[in-house]
Image (cartoon, rainbow, N blue to C red; front, side, top):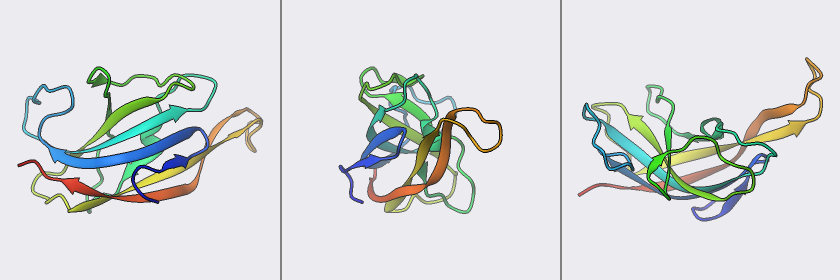
Length: 147
């Protein structure tokens, strides 16, 4: 898929826009210790009936040999940490991953979007819920470098 195309991930609609590297998160407040962040701008819509905050399990960034820590999501409308995403309310946000020190950020990153499917009854407990399924899309985004 290409940047700007809406991806149907079951529980979510995801539209990936751009990627960039920087040292200051979207809040504008520099961190207490120097970090390098890979930030991805996107739009999402929670299609489930309840608010949730599991987007980090749906949108993942290709990583170097080291595993990346869980990303932080920031709402673009107020540049603050995103909590729960309300149902059927489109949101523009930035997800920021802390990149390992000493590892150069590549010229492009690959974002994988994993689908989630709703089951009225799961196979183990007979309970309803949203469950992971296979990746539904990958998008390569060029990384804008800070001057």
